[in-house]
Length: 28
Image 1 (cartoon, helix red, strand yellow):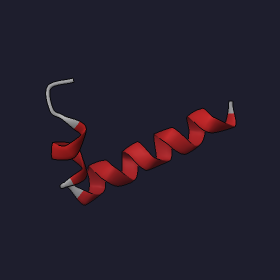
Image 2: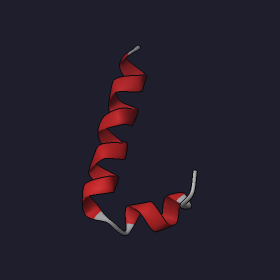
Image 3: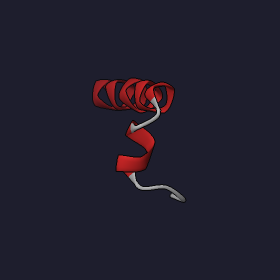
Image 4: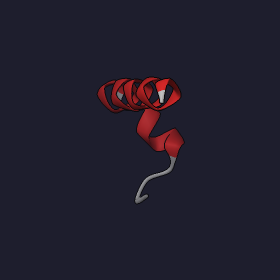
């Protein structure tokens, strides 16, 4: 990744997308 997770979570939209991805991954 080009950015650290901490940098990404400062951007609400990116944090939301990451949270959505994590939710999808935990369903598998």
